[in-house]
Image 1 (cartoon, rainbow, N blue to C red):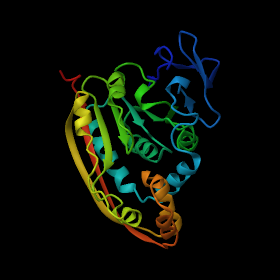
Image 2: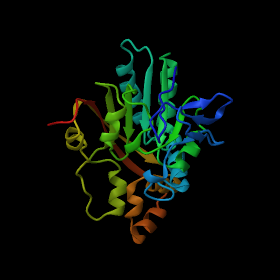
Image 3: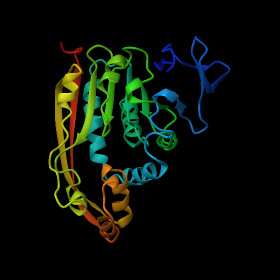
Image 4: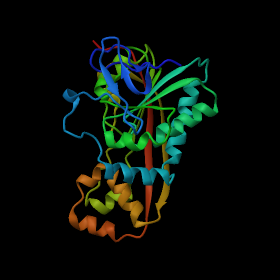
Length: 288
């Protein structure tokens, strides 16, 4: 299936170079990009960076990879995959799917496996602004196109994608609209009110139970909520390494005080609540 990757400079279709399909990509205007030896394509232009090395650091990425590979969040991945399958199965002739904010690629890889198991023709793209994240992600599957890029400047041809998934990351709905086909869905996963409640109780005196609601922001940019599912379960972190890895992969790592950190470093295990909300949105154009 043809790729729908676009040049980040001029938006022309970007293709592997004929004489070197594994390394150099170029467009008709002559802009070219080298594929990194680790297997990802860096399409993040300097003017789209807010720092020298945007996104998660390698330490954060490795902590996330260890925890996700322990299958702690596998039920979340299963819920997402089932939702995508139900979207895809009716008359699927070939799907172009982007996982925006893919991180180190755990959810992307598992989605790829499910699509392959159901013999659904597709192209799957993992997009993240962190080069370190994609260094790890590219190890997971060569069948996925791993792209370093900003969610606000997605490197795809206009109106070429059948689906965008976006898990636990910043919303950039204006960037989604440019690359989605008319009526194509966006599937978001965000945390619910009690997500990681026990970890937060270790960090804060007063725990905020107000969950993030993406609906107002999505509606403001012309998207309508078209489906929703919540997942809640209890699980256990069986070692202090897992507790610290979990802390590293959350925004709470920036807010934890020394005394709370020392307390967490002494815990041998921790029971935690998982609470996530999957929401599907459909783009109907900018509201008046």
